[in-house]
Length: 311
Ligand code: AMP
Ligand code: MG
Image (tube, rainbow, N blue to C red; front, side):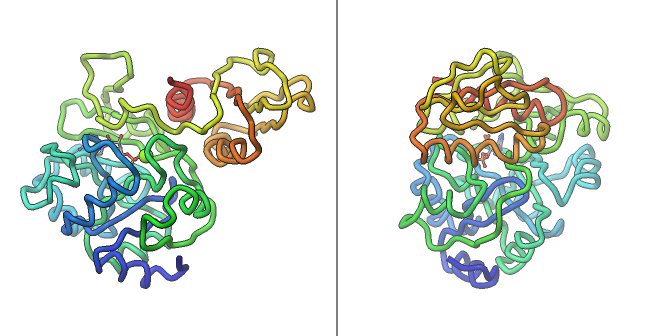
């Protein structure tokens, strides 16, 4: 545990696993060019071996260490959204260890925006593959305490920041296809991506012909409590072991064990995974979660809610 990015970076360079905050959620990183260390990310998280990792950079100059080529559409997206919560898929560089991409010929790359992350990545001075720093399937960590709860004893270091700003993961856009395709909705809206590059495809879970991102097939983001989706708070069943989260308030909040009403989608996303973990700590058995209008950040929010509720 440390609050000093240079200390954390030196542990990573020694082959260690380091959890660190970003503007989306906390990540669990290793040196991309030490395959044994990268393999330990999968072990620590109990992550399925077919789920590739996103590589984090601090400088554009590092891109050609991990990607074989950079399509023009990616130049536009990087110009507008990097540094920031946008992951781009490129053809993989042949020298990048295959464990990073779970054997795929493509690699996901992003450049975080949070100053603490950038200082850490600069000190690492190597590309850092890092999935979310939770045990696989659990809610992504939005606070270092959530990382510790899931991974203590399995990793070398947690770089402590505060609570993460977005609370949902990066948007993933495949730049190797024409038109480019959104593989995972996230902190940057599909509308903003479309405005930047024109036509984009959006992969949906039921679209069997659409390009897929391996990680989006897994049940994910789930607390121990059962998550049930509701369109309105009137559909949530009150009880002392039931919780409710949504944009609209329930008629009788005191009839629930816990309730949380978010002011807008950004606040909902910021609080969602934190709330899931708080509900588990309080022994809630069912969490009723209100779905939101499927526009802007609402797409990412509905995606996380649907997958948390999947069985
Ligand atoms: P996580 O970092 O745990 O939020 O998961 C990373 C996400 O990025 C998963 O959904 C992966 O499937 C996706 N991803 C990473 N690399 C690739 C790639 N080369 N092609 C498609 N999806 C990818
Ligand atoms: Mg994850």
